[in-house]
Length: 405
Image (cartoon, rainbow, N blue to C red; front, side):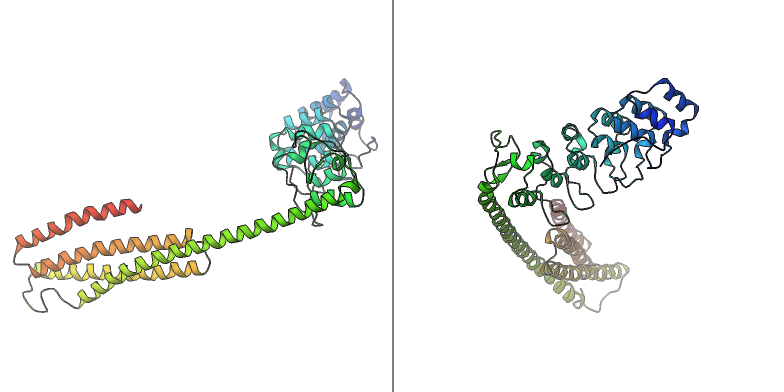
């Protein structure tokens, strides 16, 4: 896959392919530094040659002049790899460290096959590179990344000769990720055993009925025979399928139970709020046609103002109560339709409750206004009535508001 030989390149290509970088190379860079990213016929720049040969000093010198070459890929049909991919394919950990020290984000890059550096290290059986990557903080972003065929590094690990159990037993590794052929890494192990095409990894990291890495069950490793383990693997596969079915059924029952509980809560809220709102609506509707003090009487300025305040507050109370009833119906429909009652439904009930509290408060103001209209000639009695009504009600109202919010 990665057979390299300098050809059809510049003097800088040839210099970086050597084991060390000499004064002539430095002079070339100083004299004509645009050679640094000049590709040869295969799209390989000098940095690619240095990474291929493990020439850390050359890599360091080139990056010191221009570190943009880290993001340049080859153009030949060999995967369109960057210098980091090339170094990983050849197992040059010091070069990888140097590239990452200058450009810490270059580990994110993939080649034309959609493969990251972990894919390539596993595919090329570079155990030293794999162990280096496993210890990096960004490793968790690579372990389950899929290439263009949907394969994660674990899929490639099954067919490789790598003896790195850290990948398989890592907590972030998804052993049941599907590729484009609907095969998981575990399925590939099963398939290899059926066809007796066992890799080093497959024959080493199978313990009892599950596929585990060395060190999980007391550090035991078992050298397995395909025929002896075929029945065990089939039982394990059936067990996993039954477990998945049981888990799915359990999740469905839990979901149905949760839905039923949410419906019951919603129904209880609906009944309580609608009854209160309906009572307020009835009271305000009746009061609108039972004019305080009758239709006739003195029409002084204070009494007219009291009548005006009564009709306004009574109307506000009725509108708020009717609106709260409509919101309760809408919230109930929201729950019946299968939407999340703990988000939209409860939010609607909360608004309805606030409107009911507002209507009760305004209704009390309407009562005070009506009292003033009826007892306009007895100022002392009006004041006493207002004090008796307002003080305890206001205190209780604000306490309710504080409890709700």
